[in-house]
Image 1: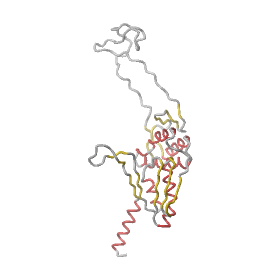
Image 2 (image 1 turned 180 degrees about the vertical axis):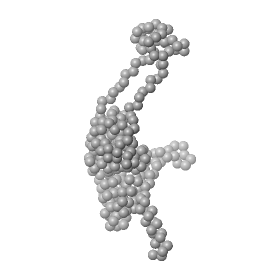
Image 3 (image 1 turned 60 degrees about the vertical axis):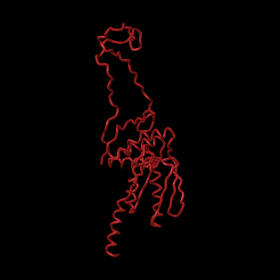
Image 4 (image 1 turned 90 degrees about the vertical axis):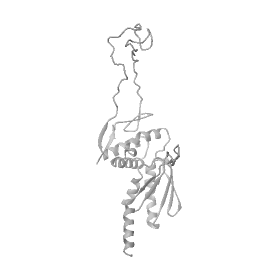
Length: 261
């Protein structure tokens, strides 16, 4: 399978440019020459010695060698769309995140979550989030190479403090830690706090389904939604994901009930 990815060699964000290894490249600023604007009569409008008129040409003189068009200059885009394989995208993300200090587990899980989202066409939760994450890491708004703190409040309820690290690796590793309790007690609950964006919630639900489990996941977001009739946003979106296993099992239960068993 293949997915779309912005030009892989360079990632740009507000802090500068990042190469494929997460290193910051020096900012470059393009100097632009002042444009000799024309007035309503089509005659040059600079006074002698004025900035943009270094020749000191008198007002009203026309520079015959100057271009006749003085509108804004069109600039070529520095990005392009290319097609890459799943492995190429995974390798690229892992290289960038490890270059920013993430350990192999954090980088690998994050890359897998983003790539799965891109392959499903959910690009808002795909690799396009990489420059934002790189910026957050460099500004120390997000931690890398951290170990989440796991605490069991009961035998089947696990509470996790992500320590401001990767939300994806925190959720996936914590769910794996919860599985033995689920298989023993028939039910398990996981809560996660202090973690970065967890990505596509369905990622975790589907992997639990592959393990033969039912999984329902919920998460909140930043304030985005207006209450009914409200003038301003007050609540976040509540993302919900449930496994297909749940639907199949529910169907089997209804069939068993109809059969009287």
